[in-house]
Length: 206
Image 1 (cartoon, one colour):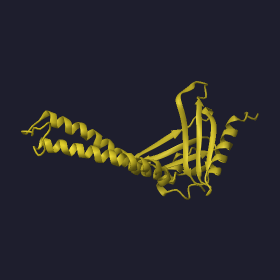
Image 2 (cartoon, helix red, strand yellow):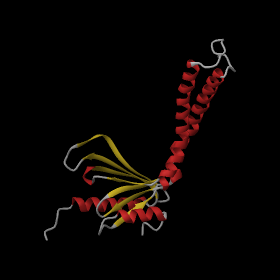
Image 3 (tube, helix red, strand yellow):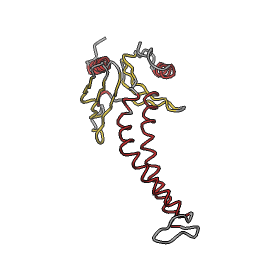
Image 4 (cartoon, one colour):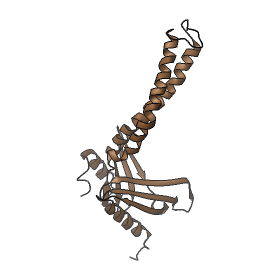
Protein backbone atom coordinates (compact mmCIF):
# COMPACT_ATOMS: atom_id res chain seq x y z
CA UNK A 1 0.00 0.00 0.00
CA UNK A 2 2.57 2.57 1.15
CA UNK A 3 5.19 1.39 -1.36
CA UNK A 4 2.91 2.10 -4.34
CA UNK A 5 3.88 5.78 -4.50
CA UNK A 6 7.61 5.14 -3.97
CA UNK A 7 10.18 4.89 -6.78
CA UNK A 8 10.60 1.27 -7.84
CA UNK A 9 14.18 0.99 -6.61
CA UNK A 10 13.34 2.47 -3.20
CA UNK A 11 10.22 0.29 -2.84
CA UNK A 12 12.18 -2.86 -3.72
CA UNK A 13 14.93 -2.02 -1.21
CA UNK A 14 12.32 -1.35 1.48
CA UNK A 15 10.53 -4.65 0.88
CA UNK A 16 13.86 -6.44 0.94
CA UNK A 17 14.71 -4.84 4.29
CA UNK A 18 11.57 -6.10 6.03
CA UNK A 19 12.11 -9.10 8.27
CA UNK A 20 10.05 -12.28 8.02
CA UNK A 21 6.55 -11.56 9.28
CA UNK A 22 7.23 -7.84 9.69
CA UNK A 23 4.34 -5.61 8.55
CA UNK A 24 4.89 -2.19 7.03
CA UNK A 25 2.50 0.28 8.70
CA UNK A 26 3.66 3.48 7.00
CA UNK A 27 6.33 4.70 4.60
CA UNK A 28 7.00 8.08 3.06
CA UNK A 29 9.59 10.29 1.43
CA UNK A 30 10.50 13.90 2.16
CA UNK A 31 9.47 16.47 -0.41
CA UNK A 32 12.83 17.10 -2.13
CA UNK A 33 12.28 20.79 -2.77
CA UNK A 34 10.75 21.60 0.61
CA UNK A 35 13.69 19.84 2.26
CA UNK A 36 16.09 21.93 0.20
CA UNK A 37 14.39 25.27 0.91
CA UNK A 38 16.65 26.33 3.79
CA UNK A 39 19.86 25.26 2.02
CA UNK A 40 18.70 27.21 -1.07
CA UNK A 41 18.19 30.37 1.00
CA UNK A 42 21.58 29.85 2.64
CA UNK A 43 23.21 29.31 -0.75
CA UNK A 44 21.68 32.45 -2.28
CA UNK A 45 22.24 34.89 0.56
CA UNK A 46 25.48 33.51 2.01
CA UNK A 47 27.10 30.95 -0.26
CA UNK A 48 26.94 32.99 -3.47
CA UNK A 49 28.42 36.22 -2.01
CA UNK A 50 31.05 34.11 -0.22
CA UNK A 51 31.99 32.43 -3.50
CA UNK A 52 32.16 35.70 -5.43
CA UNK A 53 34.41 37.40 -2.85
CA UNK A 54 36.70 34.41 -2.36
CA UNK A 55 36.80 33.81 -6.13
CA UNK A 56 37.88 37.42 -6.70
CA UNK A 57 40.62 37.09 -4.05
CA UNK A 58 41.82 33.83 -5.58
CA UNK A 59 41.89 35.31 -9.08
CA UNK A 60 43.97 38.25 -7.82
CA UNK A 61 46.43 35.82 -6.20
CA UNK A 62 46.71 33.91 -9.49
CA UNK A 63 47.25 37.12 -11.44
CA UNK A 64 49.98 38.14 -8.99
CA UNK A 65 51.82 34.84 -9.48
CA UNK A 66 51.52 35.36 -13.24
CA UNK A 67 53.03 38.84 -12.83
CA UNK A 68 49.90 40.63 -14.04
CA UNK A 69 49.10 42.61 -10.89
CA UNK A 70 51.37 44.01 -8.13
CA UNK A 71 51.28 43.14 -4.44
CA UNK A 72 52.63 45.76 -2.01
CA UNK A 73 53.72 47.73 -5.05
CA UNK A 74 55.84 44.91 -6.47
CA UNK A 75 55.24 42.53 -9.36
CA UNK A 76 56.01 38.84 -9.08
CA UNK A 77 59.10 37.67 -10.97
CA UNK A 78 57.71 34.17 -11.44
CA UNK A 79 57.66 31.48 -8.79
CA UNK A 80 56.56 32.84 -5.42
CA UNK A 81 55.88 30.91 -2.23
CA UNK A 82 53.78 33.79 -0.98
CA UNK A 83 51.68 33.80 -4.13
CA UNK A 84 51.18 30.04 -4.06
CA UNK A 85 50.23 30.21 -0.38
CA UNK A 86 47.69 32.93 -1.19
CA UNK A 87 46.19 30.79 -3.97
CA UNK A 88 45.94 27.77 -1.65
CA UNK A 89 44.45 29.84 1.19
CA UNK A 90 41.82 31.57 -0.94
CA UNK A 91 41.14 28.29 -2.72
CA UNK A 92 39.90 26.83 0.57
CA UNK A 93 37.31 29.61 0.82
CA UNK A 94 36.27 29.03 -2.80
CA UNK A 95 35.78 25.36 -2.00
CA UNK A 96 33.65 26.25 1.04
CA UNK A 97 31.49 28.54 -1.12
CA UNK A 98 31.02 25.80 -3.70
CA UNK A 99 30.04 23.36 -0.92
CA UNK A 100 27.39 25.77 0.40
CA UNK A 101 25.95 26.27 -3.10
CA UNK A 102 25.99 22.50 -3.76
CA UNK A 103 24.20 21.67 -0.48
CA UNK A 104 20.64 22.12 -1.90
CA UNK A 105 21.41 19.77 -4.80
CA UNK A 106 22.73 17.14 -2.38
CA UNK A 107 19.62 17.60 -0.20
CA UNK A 108 17.34 17.04 -3.20
CA UNK A 109 19.32 13.95 -4.22
CA UNK A 110 19.23 12.54 -0.68
CA UNK A 111 15.46 13.12 -0.30
CA UNK A 112 14.76 11.36 -3.59
CA UNK A 113 16.84 8.36 -2.52
CA UNK A 114 15.59 8.03 1.06
CA UNK A 115 12.44 6.74 2.73
CA UNK A 116 11.12 6.75 6.29
CA UNK A 117 9.46 3.52 7.40
CA UNK A 118 7.38 2.47 10.41
CA UNK A 119 6.53 -1.19 10.84
CA UNK A 120 4.88 -3.21 13.60
CA UNK A 121 8.37 -3.74 15.08
CA UNK A 122 10.57 -0.70 14.44
CA UNK A 123 11.10 2.69 12.87
CA UNK A 124 13.99 3.33 10.50
CA UNK A 125 15.31 5.41 7.64
CA UNK A 126 16.56 3.73 4.47
CA UNK A 127 18.91 5.55 2.11
CA UNK A 128 20.21 4.35 -1.24
CA UNK A 129 23.36 6.38 -1.88
CA UNK A 130 25.31 5.26 -4.97
CA UNK A 131 25.86 1.53 -4.42
CA UNK A 132 25.28 1.64 -0.66
CA UNK A 133 22.19 0.97 1.41
CA UNK A 134 22.22 2.84 4.71
CA UNK A 135 19.76 1.87 7.46
CA UNK A 136 19.32 4.14 10.50
CA UNK A 137 17.34 2.48 13.29
CA UNK A 138 15.70 4.21 16.24
CA UNK A 139 15.76 2.67 19.72
CA UNK A 140 12.05 2.82 20.60
CA UNK A 141 12.64 3.07 24.35
CA UNK A 142 14.72 6.22 23.75
CA UNK A 143 11.75 8.20 22.39
CA UNK A 144 10.68 10.75 25.03
CA UNK A 145 8.37 13.03 23.07
CA UNK A 146 6.73 13.26 19.66
CA UNK A 147 5.78 16.61 18.11
CA UNK A 148 3.79 17.03 14.90
CA UNK A 149 3.74 19.92 12.45
CA UNK A 150 0.88 19.63 9.99
CA UNK A 151 0.16 21.72 6.89
CA UNK A 152 -3.24 22.49 5.40
CA UNK A 153 -2.73 19.84 2.68
CA UNK A 154 -2.20 17.07 5.26
CA UNK A 155 1.55 16.91 4.88
CA UNK A 156 4.02 17.84 7.59
CA UNK A 157 6.82 16.71 9.86
CA UNK A 158 7.34 14.71 13.05
CA UNK A 159 10.01 15.53 15.64
CA UNK A 160 11.07 12.61 17.82
CA UNK A 161 13.00 13.71 20.91
CA UNK A 162 15.35 10.93 22.00
CA UNK A 163 16.43 10.77 25.64
CA UNK A 164 17.66 7.40 26.91
CA UNK A 165 18.68 4.00 25.66
CA UNK A 166 16.59 1.02 26.70
CA UNK A 167 19.01 0.25 29.54
CA UNK A 168 18.49 3.72 31.03
CA UNK A 169 21.83 5.20 29.94
CA UNK A 170 21.55 8.85 28.91
CA UNK A 171 22.18 9.61 25.26
CA UNK A 172 25.18 11.94 24.81
CA UNK A 173 24.15 15.42 23.72
CA UNK A 174 20.86 16.43 22.15
CA UNK A 175 19.30 13.95 19.76
CA UNK A 176 16.26 14.50 17.57
CA UNK A 177 14.95 12.47 14.66
CA UNK A 178 13.09 14.51 12.07
CA UNK A 179 10.61 12.91 9.69
CA UNK A 180 10.32 15.97 7.51
CA UNK A 181 8.00 17.24 4.79
CA UNK A 182 6.10 13.99 4.13
CA UNK A 183 2.55 13.45 2.90
CA UNK A 184 -0.28 12.37 5.24
CA UNK A 185 1.60 13.11 8.44
CA UNK A 186 -1.34 11.96 10.59
CA UNK A 187 -0.98 8.41 9.25
CA UNK A 188 2.71 8.50 10.16
CA UNK A 189 1.91 9.53 13.73
CA UNK A 190 -0.83 6.92 14.07
CA UNK A 191 1.57 4.20 12.96
CA UNK A 192 4.20 5.49 15.38
CA UNK A 193 1.69 5.70 18.26
CA UNK A 194 0.53 2.12 17.59
CA UNK A 195 4.12 0.91 17.50
CA UNK A 196 4.99 2.60 20.79
CA UNK A 197 1.78 1.39 22.44
CA UNK A 198 2.47 -2.21 21.40
CA UNK A 199 6.05 -1.98 22.65
CA UNK A 200 5.01 -0.56 26.01
CA UNK A 201 2.08 -2.93 26.52
CA UNK A 202 2.74 -5.77 29.01
CA UNK A 203 3.26 -9.20 27.52
CA UNK A 204 0.07 -11.26 27.55
CA UNK A 205 0.24 -14.76 29.05
CA UNK A 206 0.12 -17.55 26.53
